Image (cartoon, rainbow, N blue to C red; front, side, top):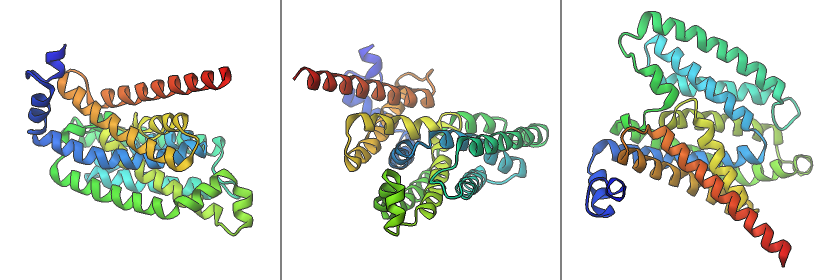
Length: 294
């Protein structure tokens, strides 16, 4: 087992050096790091605002958008971003005066978009899948080891741009999240911030799909952020924890998938993220017991 975890070398250092010698691993780490950091930061606000269900709905939107692009014969990333951002903005507009769309609106949109996904899947499998028969599986479950150098560069640039936008709106967004009524009274554009944030969630969902796939992207958005909330009640510290935990999940998940080739990287990334949440829950429970006893 130790030899396996060392990637067949006498020491873990040699195994890591060998792992990093592969182009596909470097591309996966470059793209995965930026996308994970973005997912952790955006995911913290998703959890804090109680919009995890919206994130789950966007996972199916991402699948539908990617299939629409594939059926049209264009780059699936165009469909990913167009669909997730458009639907996110629509959800924000349908929310009305509320800070977030309710479950009925999200569920209705979810069902409608999923129906479109079935239509595009039928079109793609009957007309276009012969040219790229694995694309459907890659959209569902991710293909982080298949990311090219140009894709990694593009994904990193997009992630950095989205992180900058989030940094600009982070303080008023936090205010509007914690106390929307007071924030509105103080002149904070609560509804506009909600729409902008949902657009960021949509773009983040499109980014995360490239790493863990449409089915699991909500895990990368929500699980590290939920663990961060257990570790700290201070928003800015928890925000940093969320990004760090998401990046750690991607790094360790990629390393585990390389060490055990039979395990898909999407599974190992989610495994690490789940273990992070479990560890955070144990630490939180232990801290609570110590506080009560003292």
